[in-house]
Figure 1 (cartoon, one colour):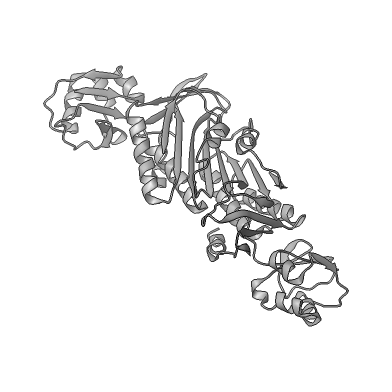
Figure 2 (cartoon, chains in turn orange, cyan, red, blue):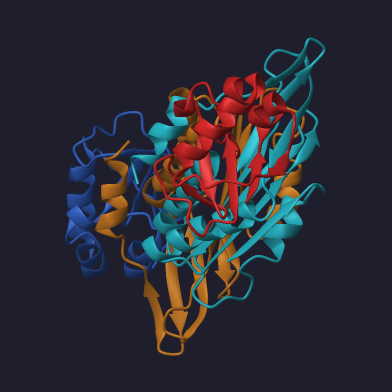
Length: 146
Length: 146
Length: 81
Length: 81
């Protein structure tokens, strides 16, 4: 299990190459990458604020919960903060398990919990100004399925 | 949408780097990688046989079905054949979508259908001989949820 | 008509593919003809519920008609992924 | 006690964090004290149902006791991922 919170970009390929390599019993790896979308064509950047200290703890707790629920061999979460341009990578999650069902379920669980339980806040900065992204009911609802 | 059936290894990182890059509207990428497990410690290699011609068609049909069901911007399937050693990569699937729910669901759908509807057969070769892997009821059951 | 065999069906019959002259109306009729040929075919087709069939590279069923079909393939349930 | 503010809570109050001397028994009591200070606090805490609170970096609730707590953080619902 590992957690990294950083402003620097990351390389999904390089991260996956080093992830769960040579761990005995790995049959399935799942990765998720979140990317900045610009739905209106006016986004200058997405500014991501976080709560240093709590962020790492909250993500580690979510990972520990995933490990307790599924047969996981490893997990990785990287989340960036600071200003991110459209098409830049925001974050990634990776899971490794003997079987695909565990790897998929744990990756989706990690994503759902990261969205609503890790202390990050997004602000959209456009030519018209800056606006905090509102939490979506759908994201809160997504937690209920677990 | 693309499909590759090959005996050569592939590099997940390099594949993901070139996948759905710069496609407008991409907010979520999911990848799955299947890896040869050696549960008994006796596996020399896994031999994967396929039905050339039908394989590509079957996978393309499964991808088309995924595109019809979810809001996908791109998908990629690579599946190897021939002898593969423990810890080698067997196959990968990648999906790109505006939102994570579509990317995850489509990747799981592609995997479930590839397992049971694309013409591949696995044989385990150990010191004791060669044995065809039997289809699992769980894999057939997995199709029913879609 | 080109008839192909994969995985253990190929091993039991001892051939990856062969040309078959037949007037069989359906896949099941073709299977009956093949079973009557030799014990290795009878062994391979002993339990067709354990087999799958593709007609011209599309999954099909044992009661499907063969009219116009150029390629028939028999194989066990797939185990890819 | 260190009190921290994030996202639009930070913007409304105009500070990322501050030291607060308080005898408030619960988070809700602390919020009432802060709201009484100045309009910017009253504005930030106008609707606590739109806010979340963490005590010593763990998500908590507005009726939680403050005894022994060293760091309180107020922020809107998270929008990471």
